[in-house]
Length: 278
Image (cartoon, rainbow, N blue to C red):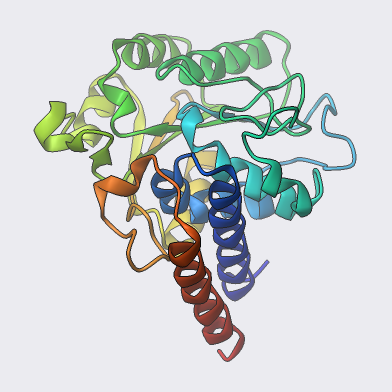
């Protein structure tokens, strides 16, 4: 895909996120929207995957460590063809396979169930270790939140990743600077994030995580790294794409009402039209 097509795809994924959370009347739109470009690049450009064969042995693995942003992952999987986009409106509904956190037993394309913050990166490290032991050529990607990295388990996993020289592992930090209780600097600052990962012997890349050219360069650089895991610190805008949600902590974990949904979808419709005219 070229950059414009990736941008159009990210906009469609944002529509899916807003639609799902509105239908559920609950969920986490802010951090799902901030990561839309990251999800898009991974699933449409970077990873070796096949929606027709979700469990193929040599597929690349993705673990959503910040599992509450499941609407972002679900909208991406639907856009990529793992399941019908129409199913997004069943998010969190009784009997739906699309629950509030990803379930690997129920959802095609989900490699690890996640929810408790800090645990996803540990699972990713385990998968990367397994790949090394078995001489497999798959790569492992995990998306963590910048609030999530306040968890000690993140750093235990990182220590092992560097010790085992897991150059088949890429940790992406969605650095939107907001968590449920406010700015991460006020809750429990993890800054400087890049220096911390460097201290754990990661190869570190700082980028604008909402910019496809920078994402492209970062993931290409990560593939060239040998003997170290890579951490991509992706500066993003929480709630990106929806005017009243952008950089507003209140939208970490609540759903838009009917009028807000209308406004949000109009924002995204206009954004899509603008992209089509480029």
